[in-house]
Image 1 (cartoon, one colour):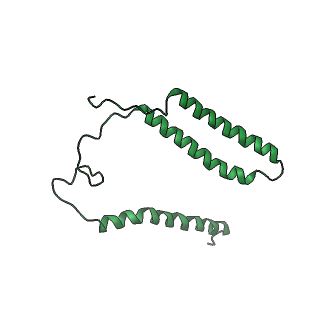
Image 2 (cartoon, one colour):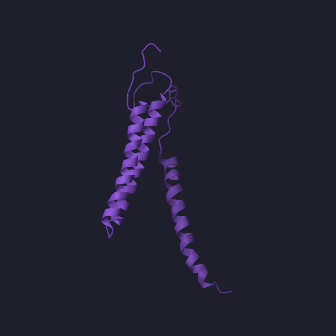
Image 3 (cartoon, one colour):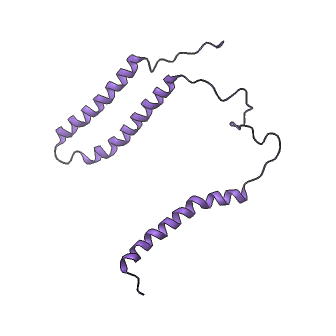
Length: 130
């Protein structure tokens, strides 16, 4: 029984899937055999940068930090969006491209102004006795 030629093309996909699985699972198996084992009462304690644990990790974090992180993430993604846009633009309609990029950056600037008016960028310390 002869194998159709189309299956030869899929054999490359199979080889890449097997290689990807080996690259994903291989380090885990290797770490299992090479990793040092620890025993004792400090084995299940939380390790934090070599510093002794002072209190519980369950502390309340202000929502303002999450808003600040979301703003950073949004602007980080938008900057990554601007790189291919700047490479694609400028091949004919330079003024139109400039206006589109200016509108895009203007909308992002409005987000910063809105967050500033809402007080996202004002850092208030919590009283120590809480």
